[in-house]
Length: 283
Length: 259
Image (cartoon, rainbow over all chains, first blue to last red):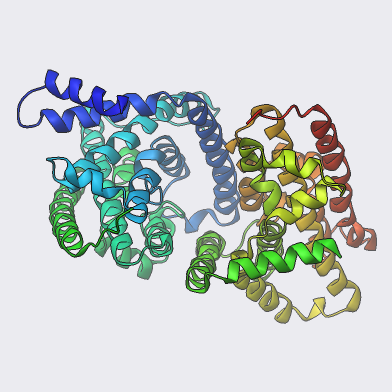
């Protein structure tokens, strides 16, 4: 109730075509920033995860130094960017608040709003992911910068690299949200989280979150490059580390854009079809 | 026996929704593929891991991940304990004239974790199969002992995590560092890591006792010839003793949530 009132007041303050979306987005952002203790737990977890992975990769690198396709310092940066922006990058975190509506039927209330449900949920989800990232990214990067060599995060690139990284990361954030929206649409057809989890597990793997993509066997890398998942994670990481630069980086961002347009329009279509066929039970 | 009854009743209730159960089981079967990806592909690329080959690492992988899934199945009641504190249903358990640990343990079992055990056990079987030096009664007993000791260690961590709820009410995700983090760290031989991490996971949380210490004996690594190393998994069961003591202390301090 009070949430809706807040929403209205904020929406009124921002008239115009995009006003409502901006309001939903802002409200959600403010909401999520309240949860600071889970964020602290998240930071500790990401740091632990990062350090253990680095110790593991170090053992591998020492076992056979010539077999490594990327230098250890590139790998260190890859891991730390991944840990810092984890909340923005992962694709297995379905918003229970949204997906639950599909199962409980509360989605009916959302349908009463004079807004497109795809756009509404998209902005809600993006906002909560951004909020989670805002609270987590800086502490993780801060600690990672302070760690002693060779585990510390370093940045060798120039402003241009940084700019490319920021563009790629922003597009990745949108792309991942689009992927989750699509995977969540499966809930309309099969109301069990099992299908979503299966998509998320495969996606996690093909986006380089489990093993950095350059370390995978070549055949698997080729598959990963065809699919959209790596554009949501692997590409921005490698632009940051300098592993992908120049023309490759720009064409990568182009492909990111292409996938984004494709997946968003597909998502809109799927939600349209799903909502047309949806049957709500009274109660 | 009471525990057996709890077990059966939980199994029956979860099988009521058969399709949903099977779907979750199927997903649980895929999950370990994400765990196996790093050891498998990385050893393929780097040819070995600090002197351990694929079969040796898979022995470790199978034991730790099998034990982890089994402990998730058995100790789910402690894992999900914060719900009972939040809802107040823990207070109901306290008035019953039976051991409180038994009741919490029996409150839930997560049978879908059977799916998660499939791949680890296949890898364990494969690792034993292709290493004939393991085909001795004593060594096979050690492997079984490591598995159960691993379950004891993970369960001990779940008990500690549950104890925290007496003070924090809500479950703290930080405990994941020791369960999921322990699984991720200890699925490789621990002596590949830097000394501080290895010491932490040997003397504070005794994963070392189901990991490189007995593995060194099983695989006849230098410095690990003494058969005494085959007995190190017993220390994993000892870990449960302080965990349960801390839990009892927590129960004594519990003041209900007043719901």
